[in-house]
Image (tube, rainbow, N blue to C red):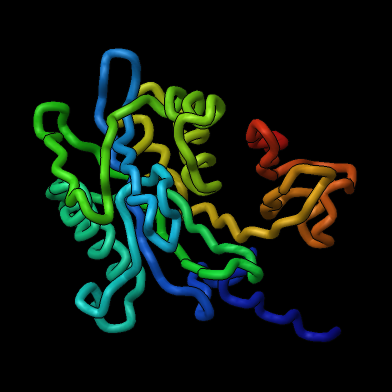
Length: 238
């Protein structure tokens, strides 16, 4: 029997961190509100070359100053906390971050970031946000459902990782529920992305979708994809 090849880093079943992508980190900052948890979203300056004008969570590339030896996970925690301070004026202890997911863009992406996503809670009375008014122009605390509705109405622009993360948060009634869900996961869910066209729509395929390996969205079977047409739809089979 031939030995099974080790999956390449950045692919399903392999190491999370893709060595061919820029390491980065993002933190989804949450606070409790009467109608459910609210997430902090920031609008990037429209002139920025990467994700210009999009609404995002605080985050950015991992800098040399964030490094702790060769431990990328620890560096990612430090980077996420630093970005929350730089972009939103929030003080977050890296030790308080809970790992949520990991995102690897498709090989065809013009600028590739291998990104660790964390979640963190903030007390409602300790969430004064101060944006830098340079890279970040505006902020909002909002329920995930509201941000998704704004996108459907064309009021905000979102990237697929932001859209799907907001969609995941719809299942939680408070911040504690989100943090407990993160703690229960033995490993962060890895979204190693592949992209294909289906008619006029662009489809992002993720591990578990019947068309993932072939990059053919017409293949019948289980679904794990984001269909990006006039409206966006996240499809995931049970």
